[in-house]
Image (cartoon, rainbow, N blue to C red; front, top):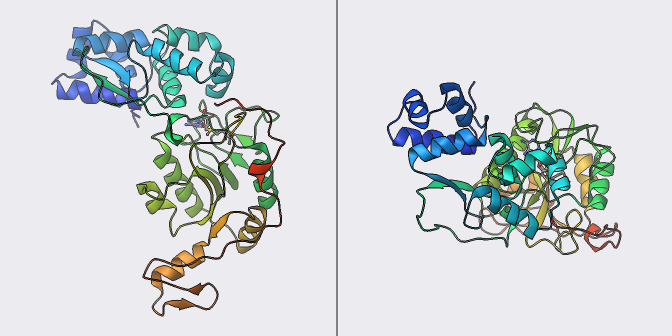
Length: 348
Ligand SMILES: C[S@@+](CC[C@H](N)C(=O)[O-])C[C@H]1O[C@@H](n2cnc3c(N)ncnc32)[C@H](O)[C@@H]1O
């Protein structure tokens, strides 16, 4: 099956709306047909992408990027976030040289894509000179894909579940450096989103636009039998939350804001731990481990949805349909967010 990536899909859509076939556009851009097909699939060289865009009279930009050539804009964002090339290259599973090429406007389309994902560039195509459509927004969770799980929280979740079998979106394939020590670590290079998951899975997905796909996958794999624990931004206003979290999982709304990875400051958004397909024992353990969190049990959500009487003996009074007062947990284990043990963070 042919898979179109975001930059690839943008090119493909632009080609079609300009009325070109792949062959006619390749001819106009003076590149081979296979080079054009590669770009539409997110492969091939950035120089081919450049030739295609020139032929279409378009340029690549990012909603979250400063104006100017995309490579230089990515470099600016990376430096602004104090993200070293070495660290980003490791997170993306590419060489430092590959990042340098991309920042100079060359290299591979696949590296450009994953670099863009990592800094949530949100690419789009526009005619050169057209005014910027979007303002830069770095104040929420979509602005970065490298929010690494606080080590202590990762350990607590791991203990509750009895050890994770899989992290399908790991920042590194090196278990010693991974913040959550699952038996199998899949990085962007392995494409954990496309892989089949197994066992007890920990997921702290990229938080940019693709998050809906990851959350859908969490739910889907839990339907296949995996136990999936996700550390996700608390966004009950989104479609993905309504479709794949609400009524489908145990939800723990974390109190306070996490310090991710090596960051010294708290995240600008609230977080939640979501458990799909948890056994009652696991849910009990999580409730104990995440003692400060507001637990919204899946069973209560389901009961609330179908409740006719407006009162549940186990969970207390229901309000209007779909609304209920949920019990707050009493803490036994200290709040991981208050720990002094977090190593000095740098925003990822
Ligand atoms: C928010 S970070 C979480 C990293 C790590 N799991 C943790 O909890 O600290 C998301 C990670 O997903 C990785 N990623 C992005 N797309 C991916 C894909 N298709 N397959 C696997 N990993 C991916 C990014 O490189 C990034 O390191």
